[in-house]
Length: 272
Image 1 (cartoon, rainbow, N blue to C red):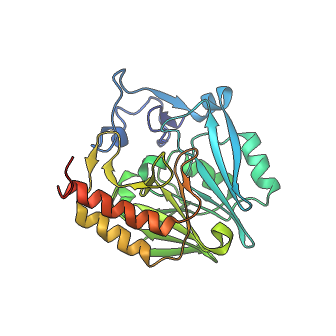
Image 2: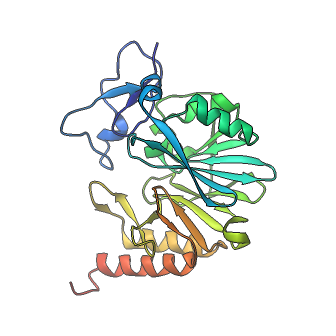
């Protein structure tokens, strides 16, 4: 039986003869069901009409993105380390070409997800490469395809490879996570932020929201907590969830400035 995928958010469900009655990710207040209604596809159908593109963000960091766009159009980031390659966040399309490229680079040592909007076909990736898929336990209830490859981590941080550590930041989702890559940005450190910290189109600021499409803000106290947590990490670059959404230098200052700006506006401390 097929594993249906939601066309709007690209999350994959457990096998079934017919599509699910609804997508709980899209029906949550942080996402949406399109005006045309809920529609479904499968990985097999995607493989017939889409392909993955590759972009080098720095020597050991590659962005993978599907064309035409699938679901939310996020990208996956492949970090290359001496101890193995690691995939940050998922895209729906996993095809023969993508598997061949990754295997030629040495395969994967693991996969980790920032939050449920990007769970997508994470089980397919874990199974294809025989690796654990790291998901924060606070978001366990949002998993739509249970599988033994899933590793539910708890607490505030989880090392996954030497120099690569997951951190629970919360905000967008209770288990919302970022990854700290110590060797990134030429050794100055980098954050892989998904949209837990949303790199804005100006590539100078970050956004913080409970829901981006539905414009539900986070409380200023929560944003200050997130910024304070990140200030304890050594980083200069921030790589976000979408194409050309990266701050390649000055990330620490950009995060502090963005959090202060956000809190001032939400608290009504700035005159429009």
